[in-house]
Image (cartoon, rainbow, N blue to C red; front, side):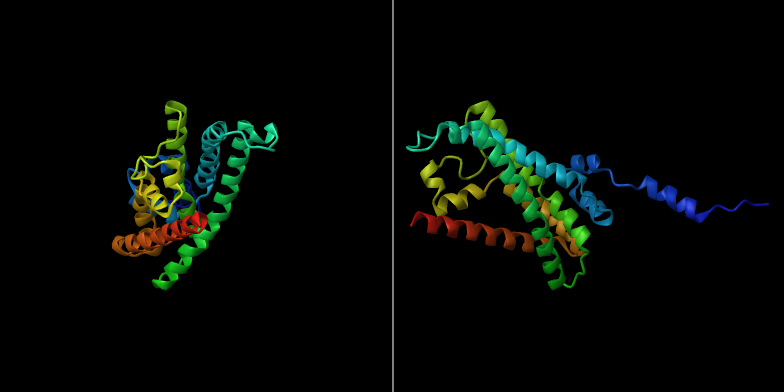
Length: 229
């Protein structure tokens, strides 16, 4: 007599074998973005996105502390409010809150753009992709933290490296500052992730990514121009 295999047990075994490995995804996202984001879309997880948000916020502490230490004395401001430790804590909490707010907003934007392109996108999948795209923000914070600790000031490889603080606050400074290595990483990863999420070509995903990035950049430059008036 031939023994029958319980299909339910076989399915469970196969499912267990295919559980998402967040650590593997974190390590392969730059090496194999197409395969990694394909896996993320098929089996969404939120472990690494949460870790990325927390690490990004924590890595901002050295930069905030450095900024406060280099501020000139402010008349009428209590010394306690000029504490580098306090500034670092406030910066970390603020960054984490902003990342957690922007995360689902970006997921909804991806869903809307996907619908415009004729692709029905599940919110859970879009949320996972949006969370993993914070990898570029993590890299940015990591580079800034390392350069602050090693060189005494934050440095981001890009076209805005040689600008003075006054120039950085201008629209031109904002534009040049955002033309950096982490922007390239974001565009690179976003191209693969949106291609998998929307089930569309990488050319269309790249075009959508560049348009979204340019709109955000234009808005930032516009705010800088208003602030300069």
